Length: 306
Ligand code: 13P
Ligand code: SF4
Image 1 (tube, rainbow, N blue to C red):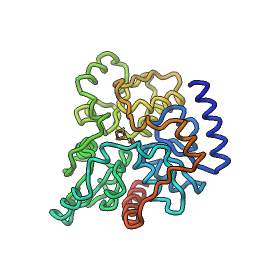
Image 2: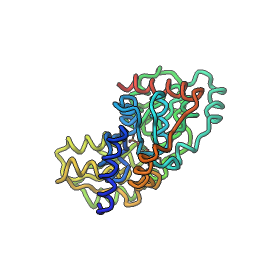
Image 3: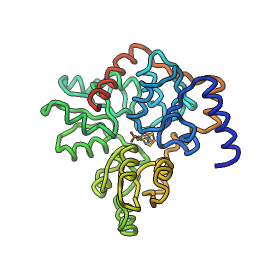
Image 4: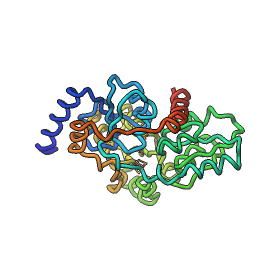
């Protein structure tokens, strides 16, 4: 961390107090951003933290669907994004029309959408899920229901394999997690036979099959904190190393690939957060005709997951 970072961090901490802004960050954010946040979590915990925010202004340090989820769940609050162009290519790959066509063909189907979707998709969704609760939610749906899981094919297949349940899915994926190959993981395991292998379910099923533990970012962090092992191969975005190192300074962490960097998550910087606080911008809003049905799908997730 540079001196300039420290100066910016001090200014941010002072300004968020002066302006009563609650900062929520994702584990893929830069270390210095996680350090100035009031709450850091996985995408599920971020949504719940927004809903329970003690303050009326929330700044979301994460990609656009995360700020949108906060705006959907907190209609009376002001939600700020320090970088509204930070987006998720997987979330943007599906259109509401794709969902409506499936629904027209199978009217009794249940649309389960990953939170990595824009508000317009959530609005045509029956229930949302995140990587931390997808299996739990699918288990609660009627056994014979036709499920359309969107938009992450890897998460869909991984959950389907776990539950032994057929799931229809949309063909898309996270470019960061999907790029990780089975061959590179097999090689890493050979190089570090003592290490436990922890994999995010956005990775390919053949990579997930090599894991000792599969879970969301929060799940991976908790697993390491509760494990007696000393070393871990971690297959998810590099930002997760910061909270793990903080909680487990003596454990050896091996990132599965140096290329596991989400450029959108990393496009948020301390400068942009400071600017956002100074100018109380950019305010994220969702039109009521979309927000209301989208909130229904998000709240249903929170009900089913808790
Ligand atoms: P989780 O933090 O819910 O595991 O999500 C990972 C992710 O890719 C968010 O964009
Ligand atoms: Fe989207 Fe993947 Fe980046 Fe998460 S890590 S925001 S899923 S591109």
